[in-house]
Amino acid sequence: MEERMFRGFSVKFIDIPANKEKGFNFPYKIIIPKEINDNPTVIYAGNLPWDFTGECSTMDELIEKSVNDLGSIDPMMGHLSLELGNPMVVPCVPRLHNFRPNFLGLDCLKNEFTLKDNDKRFESDMDIYNNLGDQHNAMIIDAIDYLRNNSINVDDKVIVCGYSEGAKFVSHLSLLHPEVIKAVVAGGTGGVMSMPLEELDGYEFTYPTGIKGLDNFNFDEFKKISFFYYMGGKDKADSAMPNFDAYHYKDKDGNDCVLRDECGNLTPFVDENGKQALKLDENGNYTAKWSLYSDSEVNSINKVLGTVIQDRFRKQVEIYNSFGLKGFYKIYEGYDHRTIFDNKEELFKDVDNFIISLWYNLFIW
Image (cartoon, rainbow, N blue to C red; front, top):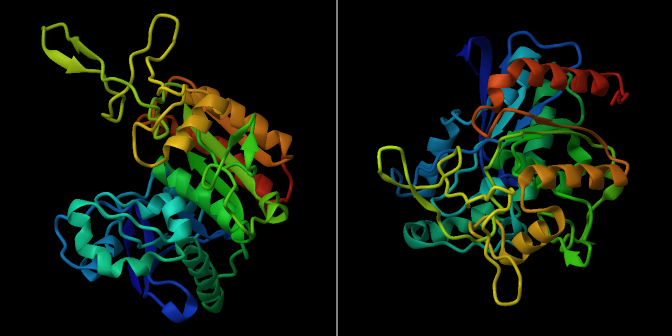
């Protein structure tokens, strides 16, 4: 156990090694604030370790690097844990250059990992990622047991928290293991929350966007979760973006430029009527611009939920409400994917009220 300052707070760091007998092949870290509240709940971090494949030649080296990488602990995680006095659990699951286990997508559900280029160096070690959703569940259970055995009487369920790709991770985990989750706090999902349905308007929604392909989805447990989803009104970061042609233009100095969003990713041209210049294939379907979602997922998402991520967000709020799910959903106008935490005062006030509703077992929205 190591005691030190972390982001201005006195905390204890506890490193828990991998334990295959208990069901998890990766280590995890527990961060315990010195000031613990009277009703502590574990914050399970949807963190995104950096890509260290260029510095590492073995899986053990990758894991070691991930153990020491806390750079992706976002301000919301810090607020829920450090400022509100809740222990935080940080899973140390390394990513590869082209393999994103922290997305917890269909490849992780099926244990079908396709490696490209230099990632193939780690091919013989990939069984360590098998049943990754179950591994996260095992880490949650183990962390709760550890804390209780050390006189920190945490809740028997956790708050999973993430932003951007980490938000998708916690949303996906809520489908796989709703029985251990008290609440989901997720921002910047790109208008793609996991939904408890197999199809809508004639389009299939397979895991992780829906539950088609999940053999043992437990809706009764899922309905017990409380949800806090948020995004910026100017957010353009869309991981379910359909294909489009890059838009070239000249800046005021005559330099050739390509249109990009606030995160530096290519983004489609939008005309004066707000219509995006997206491409359809010969069958009238959308195909994926990026690699996180498949062509069929991107087609379903954009045909049913919309091509603008704020419109998708609103549509999914309607879907969540139609299932009687408890949630607080908000678009913070004037903020994009990178600036949302500039609005911490309003954002944290909203999430604090949300947390109070959990403590007193009531929902005020």
